[in-house]
Amino acid sequence: MKKAWCIFLFALTFSAVQAQTETEKSAAQKDTESLVQQYNLDEAQAAEMLVVMERKYRNLAEFEPLKFEDTQAYLRKLRALIIATDNSFRRILKGDQLTLYNQKQAALRKEKAERYQQLRKEGASQTEIDKEMIAIDLRGMQ
Image (cartoon, rainbow, N blue to C red; front, top):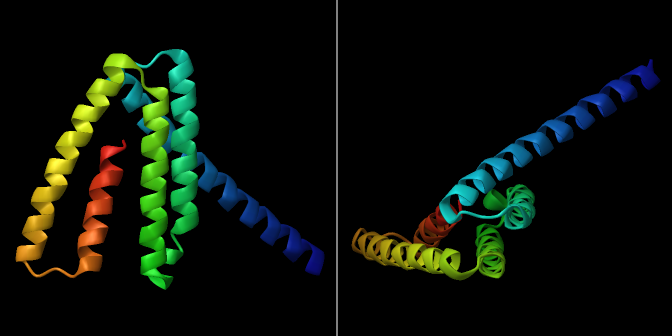
């Protein structure tokens, strides 16, 4: 009976992990397809971008437990992920693609500046502001 119970728990855990991986891959694939259209990526660039997006979602899933346990560590890890993803984008994109990416990043910085000023006027805490700025950055990488 114990063996049957252990096998059941193992199978349940394995299926949950597998389902999570498939969800991550589909989100990464969806974002990659969007990026392929936005930047007109070739096949090699699309393959590299898929690797970057899979890493992004894998890291986001790993950081999730910190969200409520240690907010500051969570935000630091998210910032590092954003910087790493941005560097990967800059390495993959070429010529006009990089110009377009830089334009989108400039618009994103403007949006962040406006939102920052709005949150300051509303009296938001620095942690709340940091969360909002990171959310804007993450949205810009899709």
